[in-house]
Image (tube, rainbow, N blue to C red):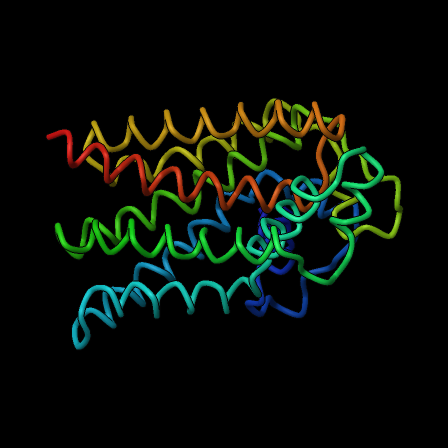
Length: 256
């Protein structure tokens, strides 16, 4: 049990800026096995987002509460996944060959594609969550609690199904490049799918369908352009899947 807890804290420490106990050891091998708990990290981040939104919504309009809650979650994660989204936009938008794409994605500077991509991503998430908040504060909170774990399950599925393509051994995501065992995948799926129970059946199904669609599309794109995935691809898919969840829930509500 202690080993499993150590793996969870390893994942939490890698994917967020949140402090973890000093007694938790770290090694690339542990991070490798910690992939099973990436969706559980989404529980923590989603919980922070939902709690901060509900707190801000007590004294501020829903739109401002949404923006501030987004700022809180970005601070908690250190914009880890947003950075991957921006890098992927730059690389896939500005590069032609696999080598060009990988070189651009590794560049710490942000370009036009990345800037436009991150601005549109944040605006779209804020607009969708504000739309949900207008239907009820708990609806927006439930969407946050469901979307963060599910979107991280989408990224975990890439680790399980695709090849890691960056040859740079110093890459911070290199320790993740291992296919999950059946047990590890089952754990990840459990933590990624369970929060969908917080949504109404139609909204939950719509979020799951949208996430699956985006994941398949992204996987095909990454294989076609790169032959597999990089750490930036994982972050990009997390962001795209999170937005897809919000949009699908909004669409499902409008359908009723």
